[in-house]
Length: 478
Image (tube, rainbow, N blue to C red; front, top):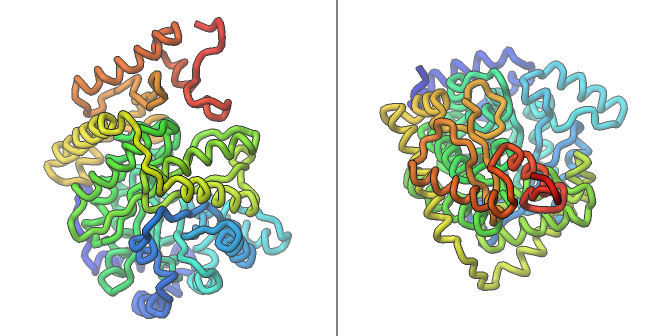
């Protein structure tokens, strides 16, 4: 049975030794030498230091290509032309599935052809030396962004390679991403990642950890996203992590998004230990984008406006080419500049929005109910309680493929475009909170002259890509 207990250093070492057989580059990982290497990095490349000392929302894109030189060029362009404050290295899909042999085949093909034959940077295959070359050749601090249920070897190599921020967690990189991964097993795998990050921290290398807030990225109710982030933050803190960035994905309603981001900070500071520095990150819209770049810029602009009002510590930006897949580096830089323009114009204005306090009350009460269920089901143990919560449906994620979750929750927008819950399954919310959700959705149904049904959900999923927020029915449809 998985437990929320700190891994002993001997167990950490035993697991690390067993992982060395997974790919040859692991042989170059030496913890003490790696600590010394981190000590040579300037302050401007120390991710947690830059993030935690910021006095305005910092901007970070997504970006990853297979070969080292083009990855350097890509990040340099985003830094210099896009004005990024923090930089990413997005990992390829084969690495995410621990298919290092296939990642190597793709990397070899990319080197031979000059084409991007992988959809990201295969950091394990580049090894410690390749990662360090990337860190040294790029001016800003760089984070590992990926989607890996078992990220243990990736963490070993990239931490040794000089990376000081690592995204993901046992829930957010399992439940929304995979079908058959056992949740208890992924918690154990991420306990290794977090303990390794904690050990680096104890030796003076402050590793920032960032749970993936958007989850499935599609109409995720804020209370669910925040509860998952808090659980992953608590699990990381047990292993000695002292820098946690809690994430949230934009749902598109300005009031709800601002309320959620403010609640995220409040609840993070409430639930996480006092010796953990909590920062927040806002992900611009993760759902479908309009195919037209001008309209896509409108979606990005709304994200920038939201960030200016809510003031998260970091914003993950999008590009106007999201609809077509991986953007060019020019489009990626343009998304950064669009966001920065909106933030810089709005951040010093005193913007007052009606309804934020009421929305915060709903969100925070709901999060506390979900967290109470995790603690109760685990008899105070967060790890065990998390497994039980997903088994019973007390905690659930909409549209998730995982067999470790009930997948019974369905969201839809109310008449103001705020994300509510249409189908609750066994989600651990109070009856009067559930009734509020139903009443808000009934108001929309009355406006539209139709019944609350799954059709609302489907319409809302496609709405923003169709140029709207709420998926209103077409004329004459009932």
